[in-house]
Amino acid sequence: MAKITLDNLAHSYNPRPQSEDDFALKELNHVWNDGEAYALLGSSGCGKSTLLNIISGLLVPSQGRILFNDVDVTEKPTAERNIAQVFQFPVVYDTMTVRGNLAFPLKNRGADAAYIADRVQKIAHMIGMEAVLDRKAQGLTADAKQKISLGRGMVREDVNALLFDEPLTVIDPHMKWELRTQLKSLHHEFGHTMIYVTHDQTEALTFADKVVVMYDGRVVQIGTPQELFERPAHTFVGYFIGSPGMNLMDAQVEGTTAYVNGATIPLGHGYSKLDGKVQIGVRPEFARLSDSEGLPVKVRRVEDVGRHKIVRAEFFGSDINIIAGESDRITSDMTRVVFDPSRVNVYANSWRVSGEAA
Ligand code: ADP
Ligand code: MG
Image (cartoon, rainbow, N blue to C red; front, side, top):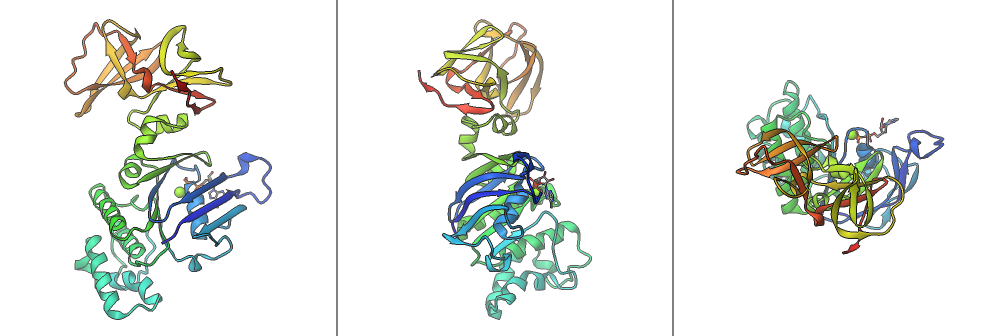
């Protein structure tokens, strides 16, 4: 297992990049702690696979270094990095049996036969393929082949890190949940450093101790699920995480007050003069409807989603979402909205400003 350090790392697929826009991965410094489980989360095209492939050695970065336990591996090929990587689509040896596929990484390393047999049995159990161990991989479904790929990724106990690149894409929803749980328990049992790439926030938040959120080639926040929820560092984190995501409004901010369309919104912190585009962000969980206090709002629709209700409303001509309790009654005289001041985040040019205690 290893601590992985990214030092001044950046990558452009263009051999002669002219500007920052030419970089699929903007400059990045980060340490992945030994034994932690990370999710790398972001929408398609934001640079997740680029980063993962640099860590595994499939790609040489155009700038910077990668260190495994403080040893520079930037120029080392994948085979010398001692990592396991599982991709979005299955990579299996069709002519081998399932057993042969699972045993392959161990045989390759010269492990002894009894250990291999035992380990293969364990992994087959985890991926639910004990019954088909002696079948050829050829002819199995894509979903079964992907389970073999996952199994092969997990079979070695001595790897520096386990890297997963959207590995559950072709797996059916029920099995997805099951495999994710297995991966988590594998992490608890062996304490591997794991990096799990996904564009699905539920997957990221349930799998990882820490979530690394990427947007447009940049890491915009690294935090626990709770930190991402309570203090989104960038407006992208605010609206990408949560369902629905954070409400964002253009505002002016002076001291402990925000002004939206001239209406005043009290803030939990004080701010000195802010430059650039100023916005406030409030999660739907921290807004509530009222019949007496707060600012005018027009309720458009109420969606009952079981655990709570999502109120879709209009606030000074813009859409706003409010989460109400499962048993809350929403009446026609509720024409006002109140924001919890301590939960209102302030952003300048998309980045969160922390403010001073009020
Ligand atoms: P993600 O995995 O988050 O979907 P990628 O890392 O695959 O994103 O891609 C990041 C950006 O780099 C995208 O704009 C993509 O089009 C570009 N890109 C990826 N691979 C290559 C490549 N081999 N050559 C040129 N551009 C690439
Ligand atoms: Mg990708």
